[in-house]
Length: 222
Image 1 (cartoon, one colour):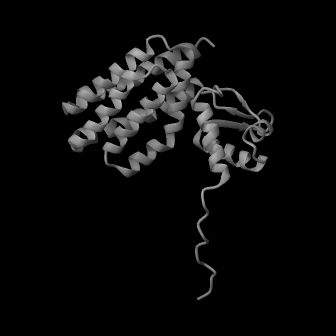
Image 2 (image 1 turned 45 degrees about the horizontal axis):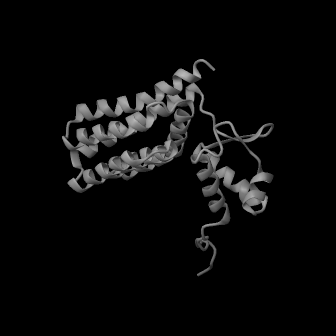
């Protein structure tokens, strides 16, 4: 049989993927704030790689919505507009409502214990950026417990943008943030464990609204 038509050998994880990981991590750590310029020359020098992998990495991050590339401005960390926030919030809400309903209907005690553990970890955090990471990790666990692969894939498609949105929120204000986030997630777990669909949907909506209100209140005056 001819080799034509056969699939080509799988490529190993490349250097550009590692570069993307490192840039993404820098964004999530706050080293590059929304709107910050990302210059290929500087990035390649800092990571001791050629500009090719950096260019490929930035394309990956652009597909994730973390960076924005324009020919006359170069590449910048995405700064979410009010329209971006509204679209992201509405889509996240639709996905999360389905996830919550499925968790309540089918999640095992082990699944719920994992959610409780994820919420418990937040009580010991003193850094806002780490709190954002744990917030995202909690919602990862909610989608995993929903037992719906395509739903999880849809969440994965906006996950980095939600992370960026929460970073935008703490960049505006961290007042009361480290205290309220663990409490809110503890309430979410309690509602899920009680299998109270209406209460859980309401609390998840309130949880999302708190962050949106902080961002909307600041972007509306800029």
